[in-house]
Length: 108
Image 1 (tube, rainbow, N blue to C red):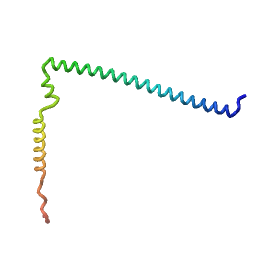
Image 2 (image 1 turned 90 degrees about the horizontal axis):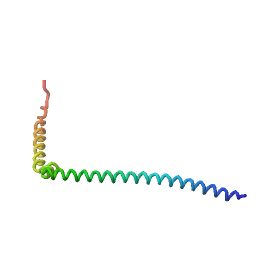
Image 3 (image 1 turned 135 degrees about the vertical axis):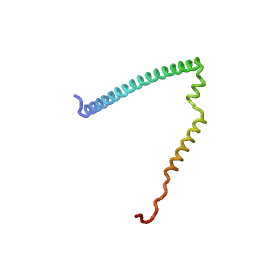
Image 4 (image 1 turned 45 degrees about the vertical axis):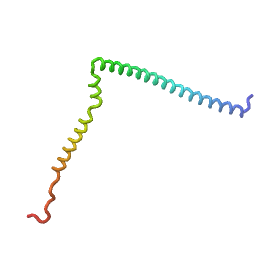
């Protein structure tokens, strides 16, 4: 027969082993899921890189490189001109909103 103290230690260790096994399964599942996600993202990146390559070849083949660069980064002069125009409009609106203060005194 097994002494009570030894039996209690065996039960305690069995409980710990079950806990560690469940943690192991949990983290193994998380690792599997993360690996699948990494594989999916890697696949998407390679597909996007191939699409960028196709797009670049298309732009070069059609001779649209300069037009595309202009589309991506418009001329700075036009942006500055646009900002100054908006500022001028705002200044005129503020000028129109200024009103004379009312006269003091009694009005009958």
